[in-house]
Length: 152
Length: 136
Image 1 (cartoon, chains in turn blue, purple):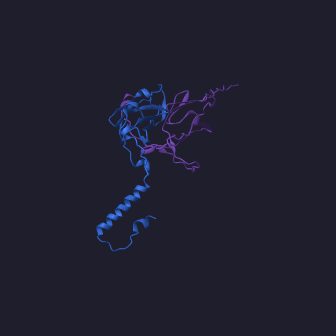
Image 2: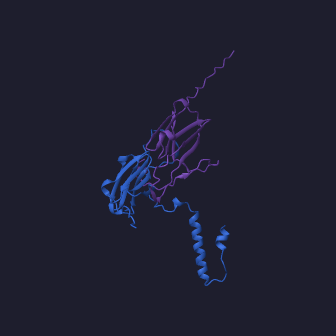
Image 3: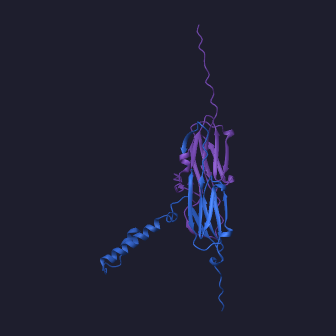
């Protein structure tokens, strides 16, 4: 399969040797893009990892924040940006506890998420349920899609 | 502790389970991050399982093997279009081997804000009996 993709050169009479190299490079790029997992493609590298989706009315921002309480979160809207910051605390256990594993981490975090369209900043709703934060940001009237009927 | 409390959190990808057995149900399976510590009386396990409801969590202990598995209900956002996807959701699964006997009657599990806290009380060991050797 890879062999065919890379070497399915129709004819060996290339117009320029560099043009042919360029075409091969593009094919290689395409090949790597296909094998890469889709969700690893675009990560900002800032905690918390965030999923952003939209429907006609709202933008939805979701993040996994296990063990964070609602009052430890600070959510602000500036322009079309949503800022989420806070601190994840892990209570220290009683004296004499011997750890076998310690994989969970405590610390502060702060993230800015740029929303792609205009928003109505007065009705932003945030809830934290089972360690998942969901922020519903309504779109501004101008950013909502408007159905246009075609008259015949 | 003050040192670790103030540091900035780094992004860590959710770890997918590298299971030797093949999956029969579709979907991704992740390994939850855990803390395990023990005191004189009990072993405590804390696991990060965001999105898990108490009803969907199964804790199983047999032959010193503790199994945590949890289903995450898929979000009902089918009519939404993804703009940015940085994490995936799926089930959680992890197994542990316990070195010590656990009093199965008094296991206590709490799930708060996506964090499971499991207390496994140790079985009181039989006190060693001293055997007196008689002479004569």
